Length: 217
Image (cartoon, rainbow, N blue to C red; front, side, top):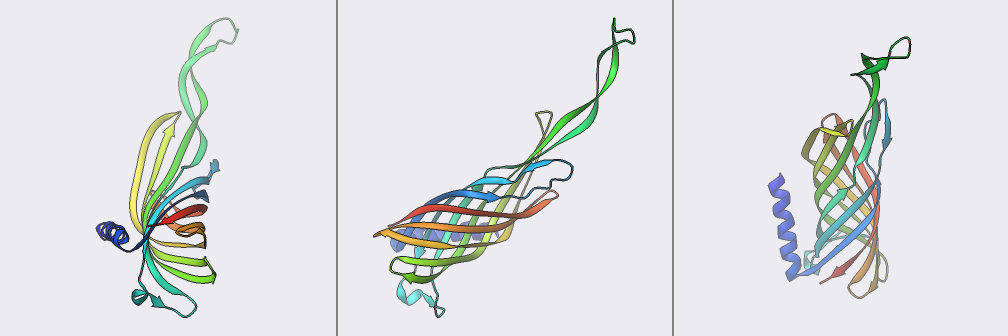
């Protein structure tokens, strides 16, 4: 399946050069849920998206009544890591004052050591583009497709890297939003993106909202 997604991405990009192609970039904020059991979490993340697609010619478009399937699009999305931090009790060897408070003696000391996990997700998506025109130069869109999602979970104990788990899986993908052409061939776009992920014992869905611009070529 990974090879199919990559081949589809390359085919769309090569077709876009010879047809009604476009490319864009957007940035935004999102929620990347991480298991918070017994600790404190930060699941708000920054999201970066780079995308490109091709518009079908009129005979190739599929009429759905009020909507039209008029293109194919690929994108690369990357999220900044969500984090989980807990304090884990452990024992270390050290020195403490004796009962008289005059001499240091060896002892085993109970301390809390920070344990931190960082979850990051990046994905390659491919989806048909369904558009509903609202007014001149303005349309809402939906992009239901699939995503090749790589989720990485890094673990640190007391500031030292402990382990890193990574998993790549094919997941459903959906984007919905609004685009507005401000100049001929230049459009602004706002979009909500959703995709699932799974790595180790962590699973959930990245949800994000981003704003960006695209240029036709």
